[in-house]
Image 1 (spheres, rainbow, N blue to C red):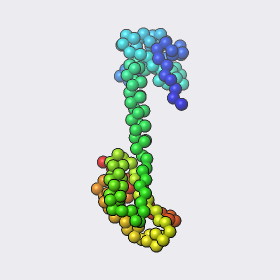
Image 2: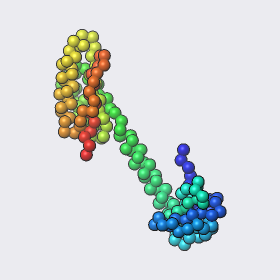
Image 3: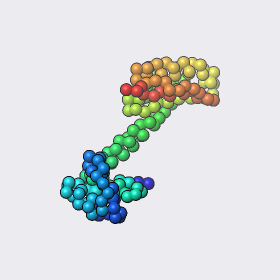
Length: 169
């Protein structure tokens, strides 16, 4: 849960430790003196650390501060979303053209920063050709050598998989 910052008159403490807009400690003043100093500079007095004794308040442009915080939050959300994984399912009998389309999609996912999991599923008698399927997956992984690295390779039961991660820039 995000706490709301107190600004100017909403600060409840009687005495506050004031830090100016350049980050220099000015001293301990009454709340009214701190607000007056901020107004003289054309800025706001924002309570940064309410638990300190006395609470620490900084002179800053509160609107600009909120805008930068919002931008920072948006940027961090953007980066966390891109650590996702996309799965592309294949079968040993997948046709060449279908395979080309699936690989084109995988390339787009890698370019967007996603990890791509290539999964080959075997049904019925296809289990007899598991080595051919493993070889096919490795060849597909080789197609992505320039843009991705093999992160993990494995398989269990009726499926084989290779996870490709984008190469660091």
